[in-house]
Length: 193
Image (cartoon, rainbow, N blue to C red):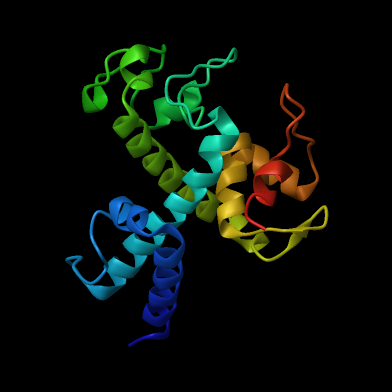
């Protein structure tokens, strides 16, 4: 068994202990049952595990874990997805029209469908992960910002808040990023310390 496979098994065992049945629900299958080549299983399982962990922290922070919520800035659902995020995920068109993806034709459809919100958030986290990698921001993992150690999950969460470009500027010290609630990317990074 490769070192990577042993690490994945250790992470899965630890998460099984912490999450119990919720882990299997999130994965949809156990790693032993998953089809495909070993490398694919490791990558897919690790991505799903990180998404579960991130979503468990972001849901309460963003909306109190309520699906049917829209804030005054137009962010939607349990994870407060922005119009831009929903466009990137092909739920919304360029002029803000709903495109019918996954049967979602209106804002109300989205706000009342927990399954679709969870699916959309998984897609969003995966997209942010790819964008962070392309932007070279994984180089910050293990480093400190304002005395806080940066983790992979912290970077993804902070990118959900600030966007990849905004996060890059903030990490470099080129730009202060604070929203109307006086929240900064550091709050999201601290979730995973």
